[in-house]
Length: 115
Image (cartoon, rainbow, N blue to C red; front, side):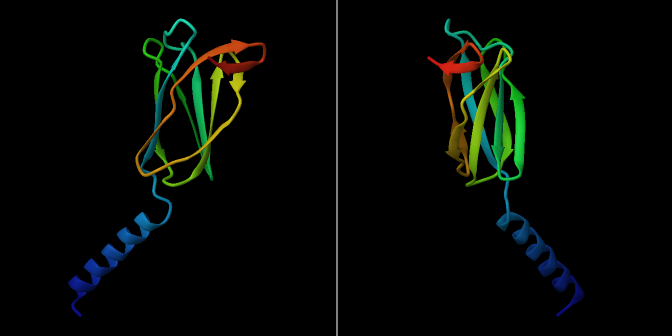
């Protein structure tokens, strides 16, 4: 086998190995609004999966958020932080595409509730 062919085979094997273990192509997207239906200004969304954690801010006007590069086919938990209070954890499993989570929220005492 020539050296060039050997290098090509090695590169292909490395690329295949990278895609077969722990790919990160999923997304978690959604919209969080307050009781008036406006964007939940100041809210944050945290997604935690096996060895992965990412927090993003919610857009003030639209309430939209996007968590990129979440592990595919992973058991995850989503927690919303709004005005210093946290929601109960929402468990879900990602797919190889987008997972949507839309909610209307409000702060009640020390917790975030869904409307």
